[in-house]
Length: 340
Image (cartoon, rainbow, N blue to C red):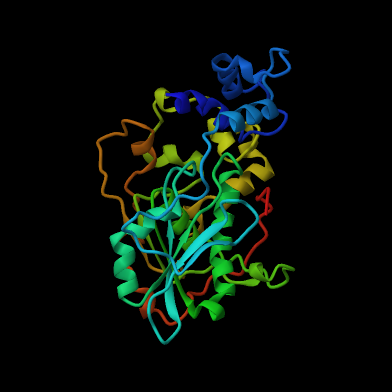
């Protein structure tokens, strides 16, 4: 119950610094539920006050989640692929004398929870390893730390980082694939369809690596993270599904939904729209959205709809069967990411 009451403050922490309880529903709700969060007692809850209160209320944990007692143990554990505390990956190596193909395993959790350790007892990972395919289980930052467009880029960096270590870890950098459920599925779809994000002129050698995949498996995926498109195929959202008018903007850390029509807002929405990235030279996709309901009854079923596209029925190739990274347009500067 406490975590549910804290939800307004979690969302508020994703807004721009100038937003306070005077102009933001989330902070206003947070102030009503937790007046003690207003540390200077001026009757206004600021973003900094909300974050500080959240930090105090956050349960103490003993570091990263541990694999299940009967789960597989990674060959390499908690490798940092970026500066954030959740920029960590685990490597499970298949036994082989030759460089192995790789599947990235991206956990779900609505970009608010979840952990890479869940894959240690996953049957599919065991099958992949037995088939000579190595696996990389990825953690990534959550929405309380950065907006969705930056989270997606962090996952792309995990792919680039692993490619940069291909020689050391004996991996076939030309045969990288991705798999996940829900948020992990949407991220896999985004990685598979997005233009190559390699920047050959980057000072950071990791960013010079390709982000392209040879295939992706998406279980219970969202079709796009451009939420302005959802009503076009889901119909209008029920009022009870929304928690505030600002919720959609907070997903991207934009001040308001009015910012969707600005150049910056349009660039952010385009960056997050997998449907607009899809082209005929993308790798094969396996989309598995089996949950069919007459009409969404809650926020979850509203976001996980059956995806219908030309690629829905495309068979997924095994990573080992594809000889090269599928071609894709060269990277284009989008200017939409607010952090690196």
